[in-house]
Amino acid sequence: MDAEHLARVGEAFLISLFISIFAGGYVALISHRAEKVRGGMLAHILHYLGAVGVVGAVPGGIAAIARGAGFLGIVMVAVSFVLISVVSLWLYALVEHPARAALTPQEDRGWTEQDARTSGL
Image (cartoon, rainbow, N blue to C red; front, side, top):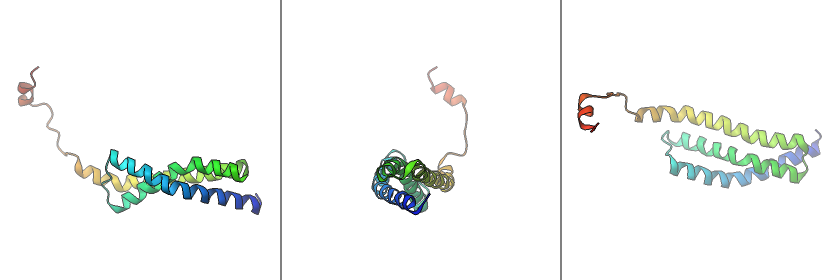
């Protein structure tokens, strides 16, 4: 791949990054409404970066096609955004898991005699 093709790939990446910064913010906001992030500021940042990566793959591929980056350029841009999302969301899971584990009840009583009497079965 020569310098001209690399420049086109870089332009496609930047175009997609610009689009996905805003669209990823919207996707992260919708996701936060569905289920809260409990791992603190780092978890929020990683969740946002994961959303940016997920959203950026398709516009990146389209921008690479529009810029004439070739098949390898298209794959490079799309895969780079997918890798950004995979790494970000994996790190997000590492940060978020302990916070969610602290919220779950630790003891399961099982089915008690009182439950059986009040169940109406």
